[in-house]
Image 1 (tube, helix red, strand yellow):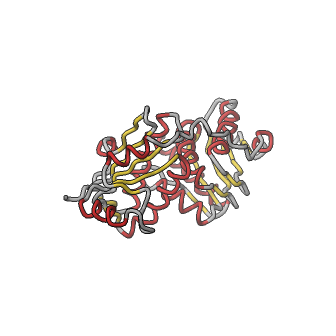
Image 2: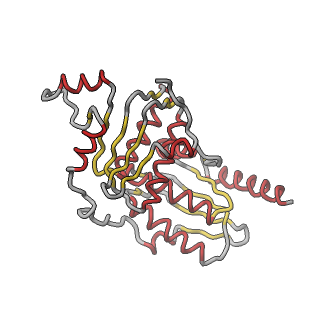
Length: 281
C-alpha cells in the first residue's frame, strides 16, 4: 500500500469516527506516514477538536495501526501527543492490525507472556472487546480543585493605560481539566467585565501542566486567545512545558511567542502592537 501524507482537515475527517452510543472513538492510522512533528500535531489537533465537539471527556479508543509509519523526527511528538490524549480522555485504548503477518503473530503468542491483550487482528475483535467493557463515565468523580478564585484573581494585573493584562501562572501545578477550566473561567470573567480585548503576557515560571490537563489546556487557551486577546507572549517556561507548548503550535498559523524573561516578553509585545498599528494604519 502506498503511504499517504495528507494531513489536511478534510482528509483527516474520515479517519476519526465518533460512535456515540458505543462510547467509542475510532482512529484510523492505516497507510499514513508521519514525516514530521507538524504532521503529528495536525492529526492530534483534529482528534482533540472532534472530542471537544462531543462535550464528553471520556471515551474508549479503537485505533487501526495497520501499515502506518512514523519517521524518527516525528517520534517525540507522536508519543507525547498520544500520551496526553490517553491520559486525558481514555477509558481504554486498544489497537487492531489486520495485516496477515500481524494476525499470525497474534495467534502464535496467544496465551504466552508475550501476548499483548490490547492488540487485535481485526476491527470486529477490537470492537467486541471494547463493547463488553463497562463504561466508567458514571463512576467519574469530580476532580478536586487545586486553586481558589480569590487567590487566582489576585494574579491578574490589568494595566489599563497600556491595555496589557499580565497573567501570573508561576508556581502553579495544573493537574487536570477541572483546574484548566477554573483558571480560564475566572480569567475570562474578569476580562468580560472590562468590555474589551487585551494584550496578554503570561508568566510561566515554575508552572507545571500535567498530562491529564494538556488537552483541555490547549483547547481552552486557543479559544481564550481568539476571543479575549489582541496578542499573547509567554515567558520563563520550563523546558518540558515549552516543548509541549511549541508542539501544539506547530500545526497552527500563529506563533507561540515564548521568551526567557518578562522584559523580553514586553519587548515582543511592543513589536506586536507596532505591527498591529501599522497594519491598521
